[in-house]
Image (tube, rainbow, N blue to C red; front, top):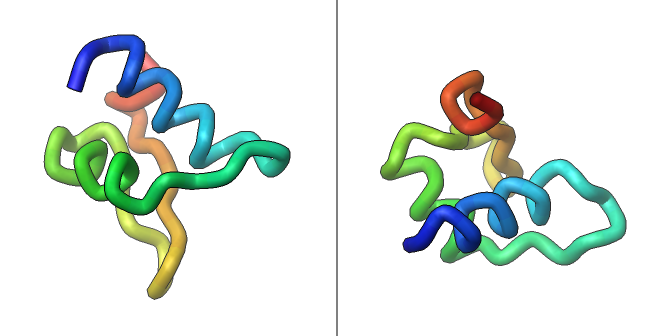
Length: 50
């Protein structure tokens, strides 16, 4: 996952007009850049924003 892929995946999570890719969001969780919220949601961590 490149830096550009990470940025796109983070934008998919926070921008309501974009479609979230669950596989990419799961990769962000493994990298510590996002966390799971509920059964089907994700949200960026502070590390994901910085």
